[in-house]
Picture 1 (tube, rainbow, N blue to C red):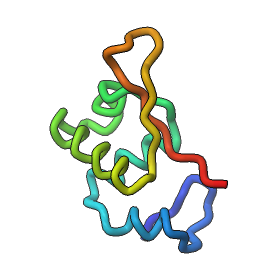
Picture 2: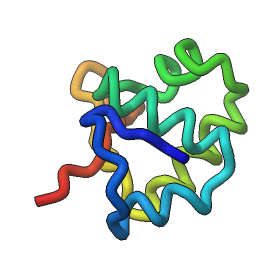
Picture 3: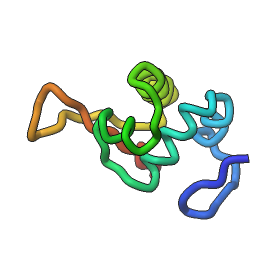
Picture 4: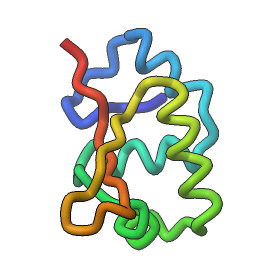
Length: 87
């Protein structure tokens, strides 16, 4: 079971999508939930996952609509990631 930063574990479509993802993607999401926004390098440092695993986790989370990707203003070659805000 995944417990979210807000302490709520009630099922929602977003949370249902997260339960089907691999553990590495869940770890990336949890780190983003607590410490966002982060670049891919910052995520790798905090999760200790490889580049490929981090990139794959981010891709799965983006495809599931769970995170947002934006341009990192100090270096436009990089992106920053954060959990999608659900209204």
